[in-house]
Length: 201
Image 1 (tube, rainbow, N blue to C red):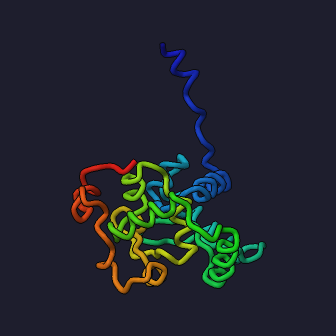
Image 2 (cartoon, rainbow, N blue to C red):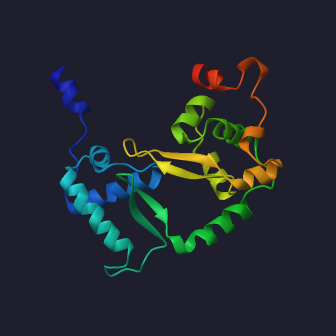
Image 3 (tube, helix red, strand yellow):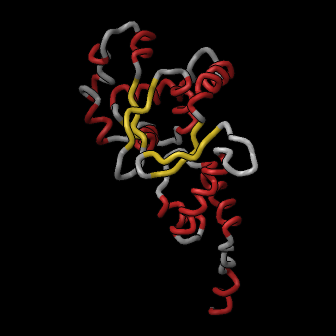
C-alpha cells in the first residue's frame, strides 16, 4: 500500500523564481475573480512570500520596467486579490472589439442571466451561477461589454465582484426604474422567495 501511494504522489514543484512565476501566470490567465496571495500560493504550490515576490516581478515586467515592452494588460490588486485587467487606455478598444464580435440580439442564456442580476442585484457571479445552475462567466463578460451591467463593488472578504444593471438597460427596456419590472412569476410573489429557496434550471 505504501508503494502504491508513493507511485501516485505528484513530484514536488520547482521553487525556482522563474518556475513559480510561470505557474502563477497560468493560474492568473484562467481566473475570473481576484485571488488572494494565500489562494495563489496554494494553487501554485509555493510559499506566500515567494508568490509575493513573483507578483512584484510580473508587475514590473508587464509595466515595461524590465527589458520588454509595456503590455496592454496589467496585474492589479482589487479587494485584496490579484487578477489580470486590460489597461484603462485600452478599454474603448476592447469594448469596440467585443461589441463587434457579439451578435445583435442577446442569447437566451444572456437574457436569463441579465434577469437574475436585475432582480437580485447587487449579486456576485457565483451567486448568479448558483441560481441558474450553470457557469455564467462568458455571459457576464458579454453583458459587461454591452454595457448592460457594471461592477458595483468588490466584497472585501471574498474578493468576489458584485454586479448591478446600468441605466442603459432601463433605456433598452423603456422604463425609468427597476421598480417598474414585473414580478418574476405569479407563483413566486416578488421573486425573492424563489431566488432564495429554489434553483432555476
